[in-house]
Length: 188
Image (cartoon, rainbow, N blue to C red; front, top):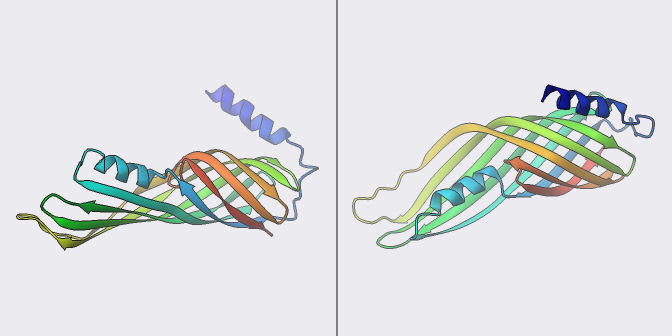
């Protein structure tokens, strides 16, 4: 495994820096993801509960990176996602969960050209889950709101960006940004 990592790092170092635009050191972006960790866990948790319907959205996020070298950027990712459960069979309760995530991140540019780029990304941080309940509960059922904090992460295996200073991008990975994520970014 160490040999594979060493070879990957050597390939990164050998990518032609000459063709890269090194004047653009900062980037800010917005994105929407599909299949985020919080949505998957919420859907899985309700999958065996036959008396509810689940809908979810997000994550909608913002990211910022500053390139400390032409190949490595450091920054952060923030997002919000949510889901809603409508319960039946004796209770008329709606549960809404909202997920707020903040993660420091590092970005590895495998290929950085003027109008095209390939990259990977790692992020780890905190997710705050806020649950609120409303409606009329069944007998012996109480409604309680709660807020919990947990560890969250994102591992983007491959990201593709295209354009000039304004760029579109899409990513494949796993974690809170989602299995698939797409958005727009501005490099300056």
